[in-house]
Length: 484
Image 1 (cartoon, rainbow, N blue to C red):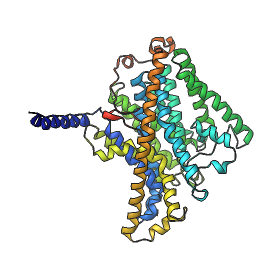
Image 2: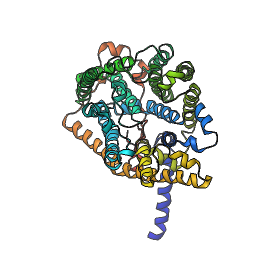
Image 3: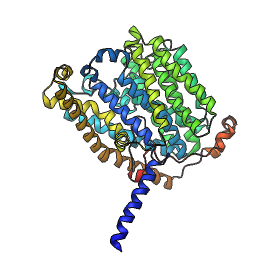
Image 4: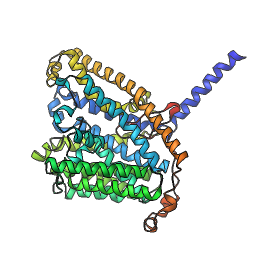
């Protein structure tokens, strides 16, 4: 009897796992798949893959693979981050989750790079910057690209936009304006179009050390105070924190970005457009309204590249020509649209696994590359000439080896760093909620703010999201649950 029962039980468990995997809202595997592809695209771009393929130079001039991956990340982040906050309904849980989601892997990556890589193969800017406290403060706040501080890693500039988006989303949530993202997306795209080269850059620092020092000190005070207010559990303090973070973020993007304003506001418009899609999908706004606004954002992002990303202005971004910008931007949106259409289908497990480790891939691909070049004794700046001269099979064997080592390292970091700290963050949130129960923001919304909240928004039920992650990667828990 026992022998006959076991196969039946195993069959039932497999069927149950299949149903869970196919459920449209269970793991959001389509987002995992897109995030994993985006991470590999960025890694391939920084591996100089265009030098290894026929006509790579011409392709690179018309399509920026790295920009494609970054924009895809930002769309995913815009889609899922506000949903994660609203599902929790608690800015404390949101901020603790974000801190324990991003900082452990980032710190481990920086420590490994600093203490393992020799000087000639170093990827950190710590040793060459000369102002260690400013470097630590600016990168510790994840605002280096807006504070005039040198980015710790070549890819850490994108974390600035992630942090700014957290500022804006949580600020809007504290005053019950979080569902009014359609006008924000459209306005940001309009600013990118009309004022793309007119809004000043570095106007708060002017590249002088004294001004930089003061700005970073003010940023530390404002951001730390704002986040502490957010996690206090007190509704009034949370709104104060929202005003501090949202207002400071708006000040930075309007005055002190490192890159031209057309890139900054295009990225913000893209992220909020991702939020608009989520809201339309779940009936929180009309689909016609969402379609028109998202269409405008996509068109604006493509036109902005043609208008501004040329010559000297193109050199101010990582995408040197306007076709490379525009084609990559449109391709990122096309990829999101494709995977959105596949959202109810079960995707290959390899792709969803790759999405789970995508944040580690994003952070570690450059240090791992430099480590392998160091071990092989290859020139860290011109190694791709050596690869390009190899026979086809040998060349791509080296590329495959790099990818294999990278994924193994990322899986180890994911299992030993990302997952344990995400679990620790959840435990800390539960402990704080038991000790200091958070006040409901909805019950104490100011009358002025409550008056502008659409009635359908307050009545709309939040769908259960078992899969939520950051645009720059997300980790998964056991039993198919995702960390936000």
